[in-house]
Image (cartoon, rainbow, N blue to C red):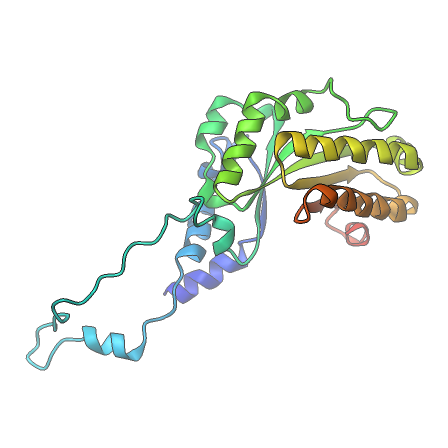
Length: 252
């Protein structure tokens, strides 16, 4: 039974969630089945050996045999999702949750289930026409607020990786951005400073409506961003959100 649960949990362990709104309005704890999936995978253990099965079988007289007296009892391990046993250490893949700026309130903060994911991405910041991060947006204000920083710190205390989502939307905007190495350099410098300032582990890049002619420049941007972040943290991570089709595969 545990083996079956483990296989099922492993099959759905890598999922993308948008925390807040609809069925997930109560946070990750409110996503049906997610907590079960993560815990089923985390709790899975090898099947009992033949010897242990035999030891628990009824004796010849028809009554169950008792364990020998004085048998040492295993001490309980650390709580799954605790700093000493992070959820990410018990998963075969990532459970990745986006926390959008419009849902960063006290209700969501209180209901985030750190046992149910391995990565949280604070969504989102964007760039202005010069490539500098736009500090006038609601996303910037939410992520750099006391609550945004507290969520990032709490996540890391529970072994959950923290990324900041960078968004750039629109064909014309992306043509200008990916056609300018100067704008890209300014964005990379801003993201590097923001990751260090908030205490995040990396960046998620979400570029939408981008012509295929700009895919090589997009790839260079992602690679240069990773190199910049790893100057500060060799374990810094970069992830990308792409289309679920052939163009997305080319971007990835």
